[in-house]
Image (cartoon, rainbow, N blue to C red):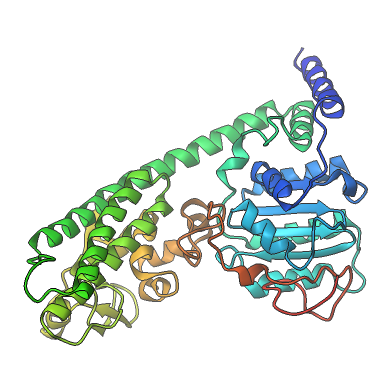
Length: 449
């Protein structure tokens, strides 16, 4: 009975694809972007000879199963897709941090946000799939690129792929074909597994966010208390416009942190909360220096042992339990404690072993620390610690947006809009064959169409 029903449903769905939901030719990059927000693969009907529906479905399923932010577009060589700006505009209009691969006519190129894949890695992959002796048909080339990109890409698939309608209100043909293929192959069970995995991931993220919420709320409260204790009035004698601007930035940081935490949906959203708190505390330090007629402090990371201590004043050598020595930024008070042979006043959080320093806690605290210390700095500070080990794991990258902590606070699969490094998508090399190694990556070199 089930097999008969599946065959009927498959036939109906395939008929719907053929008759009722054709894919329209894109009138520009924005149409392609609309399609990619709903699924990882878009094939313009004018380029359908390049990649058949079955091949597109298989490629789409591969990407979705991997759960990585990899986007593929197969487009005709047409005026509405100028190669000089195609990748950059496609990334801008799609607005999602990820890897973008485009087959344009017989040419190929790709770009990626460096939060998802290093520039050189993208360049190497593009060069490899265009090397002499490799197959040049779209299916082989795209699958070769995607296979490698899925192994290396950081982050997770965007939430918009889990469901939703296109701008025209109709399901995409590739989505319907995929569903038909899944049903025909007995995919009801597979679909249930996918739903269960997504539900499990969502539950784990909620639990991680709940842990973080406690810590971040403590940070926001502590910062608010600092503002309350601040003996500054914008109209007081000696206050000038520069001081008032510092004070305004400090107040804005407080409101921003509260607003961002209230709207946080996933653990990595917390990074932007602690970024705001770090910025606010620096504004307070600058204000204090101006009022006391001291030299303005340099912009330094907050105290490693507890960011609530404010900006660090120096670096000291520190050895975590079972680890190796490294220099960490510390506040003046903790520097004095260490010099006197005492333990620093470390920030502790709840763990299964009771309250422990945050660097001995689980991966949920990575976004919290990342907002304070930034992507480039944190791995070196935490190497050899429990949290440092977890941040370096693929599981963390997939579930909590790990890796290098992204750009501008975003990870692979995040919606960032136009907030990205345009140099990652900056050139026009859609040459069909080997070009001497100039293609891919940040696309800074020349290369023709």
